[in-house]
Length: 94
Image (cartoon, rainbow, N blue to C red; front, side, top):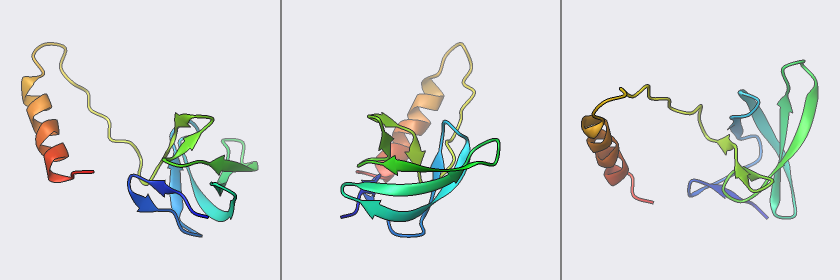
């Protein structure tokens, strides 16, 4: 059984990004409704994480296909930034 993240099926050997560890891992197999993700922690120690539907671990979304996009928005008027994000979302319907 496989899972999906952002509408795309996760396959064996797919690279996935963990936002908590700020590190990449590789899918090494599947166990029930989870994908097994091998990741090296900051200390270099390998660990296996079980990723559930939607990129969640323990009901928190921490697994992505890419490193997160970070925006340093100005503190004042963010209307232009919001319009830009709305246009991007409109181009990629879910």
